[in-house]
Length: 241
Image (cartoon, rainbow, N blue to C red; front, side, top):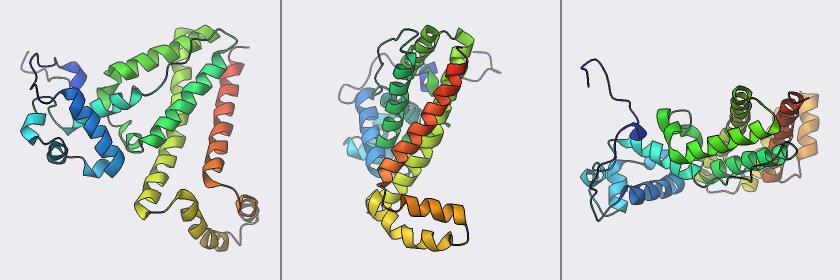
């Protein structure tokens, strides 16, 4: 490699070692990293901590991943492998298929709240096979609907940006609530008196808070997500007129 060329900083851009340590595979490392992230959050992940959970030294992990950034790339793609690939629809059924993709992506982010903070940072993680497979499939759905490939890409990016935007906020809230040791509904109930006092001088907000007083918090989140999803799809639908 010429001296002025730097290697691409991604686990997907360098060859995998032909011979791995038999007692510990990269797949085992990534699976345990996802479990650690789910249970303890981003701040808890370190090569030493992960090695301890695997009964291996950090040096053993470095045989498979060069650094923690690579580990995050692999963990993100591992989670993307949970997303289903809905049946490839025809022009009449594209919307139902895309709805399934959007709901599955939101559900996956809420199962793994840490991923919301990493998706914008993982760089070339989009070269991961699971994410590439999902992207290719979504492009196919939009193309079958009647979008050109270029606009299918734009439509997909718009949809994913909406889902990530909403789900990132939800995931951050759920992580904060989990640290408090309360359920989402318990946390809302404790906050509500202070919120009602805060909006007394704002009639529209006061009316909205009063209307939402007895609603289940998770149901309200779902309803808000569905409203936005349908409006995004309404907008895309007009492009096919």
